[in-house]
Length: 466
Image (tube, rainbow, N blue to C red; front, side, top):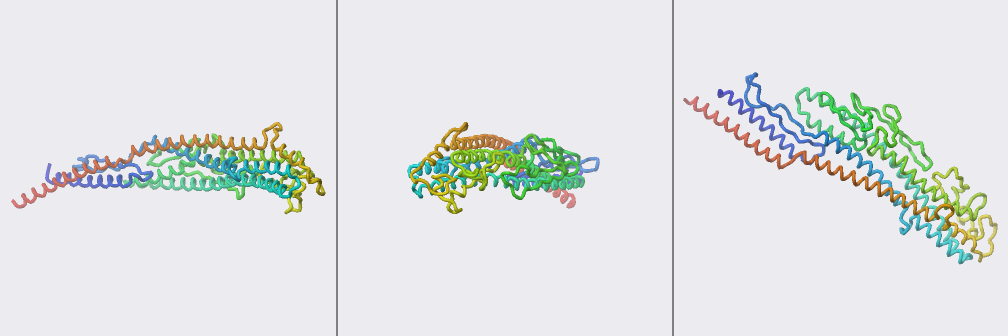
């Protein structure tokens, strides 16, 4: 080996060591950065056919376990979906409230029952009758507030669907742009690892919305498919649109859906975009919330029907459908429309004594007659082919709590699986101890090559001095 070739080999070693030190430093600095994959310098012997000796950097290798990454993304999508269901069911449970909680539906019903019993013992007392009227209005208000909470959750889900469709569309467009940049930089011989990290973070973000399968194409480009089989990104990203609803009421059932390249998609269970938070939000808006509302409406219809069976006037009982008679064919959303009959409300020109004497009464009757009040208390407690009103409320709470516990169990499993896969990813990612060991090896290699150059310098000085 000539002095020139030895000098060239040592310089190439210094250059490679410097590049390795740079990569190790980046690994350590980004050990906790989401989406960052460990880098390694790919070294090879310099080509002797080109008259060179030593080593050369062939490229930067980005270490990534594709199978583990895909599993983690699926787990995160399942966890996001489960959290949506848990969040709504907790909201519904809080809106209904346990019976021992002041202001809950059960507590309001208990207040009405107690007021009826007390007033039946003192039917001539305006204060006792006022308590019945107040308890009746409070129960109607509680049903209205519970309905508002359920419908507010539907509205929030609809708003979030619009936001997630926007994130999905934007992310797909950005990934498509990164595909082009990665292909161009790869052709130019530039390190594409930072762009790959950025693309991975974008795919991670959208995969919680819709679980995706990533397929590698030529020049390090990727295609994306939903696990349900929908093409999201191939040569170009798909176009996703959503018709957001301005106001959602309990009676609204035909709400906006998603269109993929102007083709409507079924967002029910088993659909092509099922499995992530987006499908879970549709399930909340179009499934969980309407089911909760239907159970509320059943309680409201049963309550109003029992009271009307004992006392009514012009088809209206103590509770009306916003002043109208109850219509069995229009019970959807009834819990949000229940109102105390105006004939019982002094503020609306009614009279409290009609609680005692009947809605049809035109003038006060015997003040000591509490039979009607007793009959109403008995009607609430009676089992008329179905549980009592308190029994229906207990069923409502029980079904909601059972659904919430089931959703929490799924969420816990999904969260544990996600955490396990994330930990496995970290273990296969940057290990700072290993990086520091590599840095020591880099230091030794750098020192050895520097020593060679120093020796060559000494030899040159000796030769020139001779």
